[in-house]
Structure formats: C-alpha cells, structure tokens
Length: 139
Image 1 (cartoon, one colour):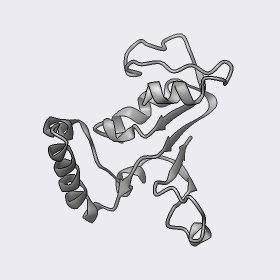
Image 2: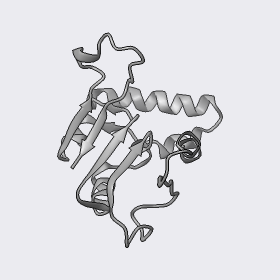
Image 3: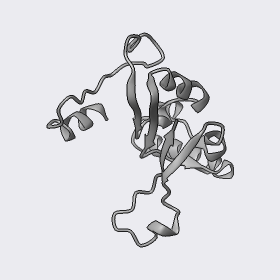
Image 4: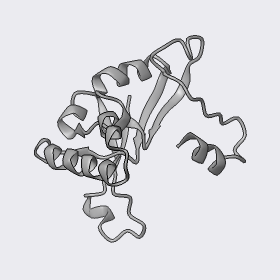
C-alpha cells in the first residue's frame, strides 16, 4: 500500500510515507495535522488501541481519517470473517486471515467521529464511481 501511495503521489511536494509502528517511538518528536488510515485500519486488532496512539501524534486541532476500509454491523461480522478466511485460503495465504480484523459500527461509536462520506446515503445513490466504504473523521 505504501509503495502504491508513494507512486501515485510522487509529484506532491513535502509528502512522505513512512513504514513503522506508530505505537512506538517512531514519531516521538513530531506532531501532525492528520493521521490517515487508507485501506489499513483493518490490520489493527482494535480501534480502542490504535486510535489513542494516533491521537497522541496529532496537533491540537488535528484529525484522524479512515478511508477505504469496511465497517460492519455486529450481525454481519461472522459472514465477513468467513469471506476473509475463504479469500485468503483461495489465494494460498490462509494465515493472513489472522492479521485482518473486522471492525463494527458499534466499535466506531465508542470514539467521537463524523462520517464525511456514507456510501449508503441516498445523496450518493446515483453517484458515478461510488466508493463502497465510508470516510470517517475522528477528532
């Protein structure tokens, strides 16, 4: 994902992509306007662990953005987990399912957030190129 992002945004000045664990000392002297989880929040076991770590990196009025990641209703979780296991099994990487986590909308409700884009909204029903995932902003 980082390699793809670096290639797509290669011409954007002062934009850097870093591989590392934000829960360590990777950015101990830095603060940011935004922390973006693009197609990645599903690789963290719980929002309750990663969101506070991301908040620590923010400037006073900074924001966390979650993009291109699925959130499920609680009753949808078992079927989503089964699809993930079947997918990774079908491509020969069955153990990868152990590193993919399914976050619920109820889990998201535990953090102060705004939905900037809701694919289920009637407002986007006739939109071209509709993204199937919500855009979440956490302050």
